[in-house]
Length: 528
Image: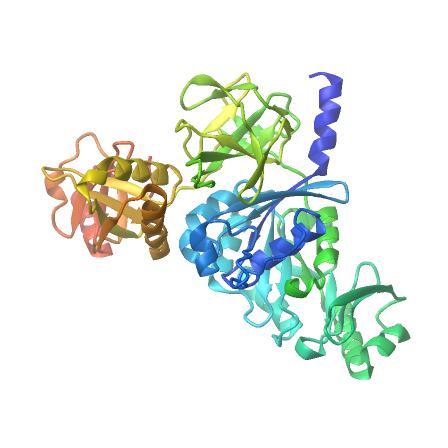
């Protein structure tokens, strides 16, 4: 590798911070994302998710259905520069039904920010997403949000994080009051206080102090809150975990920040600390071993495909995480699964659906590639060798519906929509084995059906009929010979899009019975 390219890669990789924000629905994730973008100068006015009257919708909720419902159902990618760092934020859907898209997106992140509502604590969806991050061993930073409302005692929240998630925590700052009494936060690392000014909490002032016993805190916050702060921090100093950077990087200790995203409170402090502490892009697993970011040859994998980001142009984009080397517009790379070389002509970077063409990108960056229908989720692209990345999880659907088109004249558009939305990973499609060729859709959660139906109608002009079935389990069948007649009672045999046999079962009893009756057959939870 030329010395110049090595130096360039080293410098650019050191600037990159690629992270995902994970939380339960309504913890304020989209609001926090927007405030980070405001500090990065990427947007100039924050559109609250709920402020629908003004028709100004949150930047990362770009799909029409998201704007109507006020929830994120797709993962957005946003990029901005701040304090010499190049930041890539992956805003994942908080709604539990979209866990598949979220899980895939988490593979493209080098660290995660876990957002917790101060009143609700650790919620179900947060636990699921945390477990995925923990499994990958990535660092997790915690932002406890909505301090402007009454919530749980901070010590109780820290205890809950440890008890429920099994990770130790170290508070980087500490609230001075809460809800109506909130007057600021104390920064434990820098010995400074961040204070609200004025009755409407519109301005924030940062003041250095000697320590938490500094008389200036008493002047600013009053006796009661100053005493409470001193007691809390004395207890933390004695009984709390010390800050240990190695443990943070190993995902064993989570730095905790308190704040209120809607008021900008604690957000800038969080961003600056996070950019200092979060890791730069790390190696990625491939079938031939780890791929390091500073390797000369370009490589990356596709973790998401999104059709119709611009409904006027009916386009389709593949989201690629760059894993190594330098990306240059117009370069030729190997499409490993297809076994052919392709030219990457119009790479794009994002602010949700706003995009710009880019000329170069580096490991850690997420770029969008125009997809004429050649990419699938999980595809690897590489320069000079056939690297196959082994990063993406697959899931077994739990809800199944038969799907049909209401108007037979729309069959062509129906098949196109079905094909494209399957490629996006929104639904899994199965066809029955036998005389009648029924089409089944499999999903992890009901909302996926709602979004599928909505997008078929709005993007492809097709009305569909969904008939819910009683099947609850899918198992991929691996055997020398498959006999469809053995899957008739409380089950049926279908094929997936790659022609693999899949058995659908109505209940666990039916599945266990089939396994016992066919010991020579392998029943797999995900596609082989």
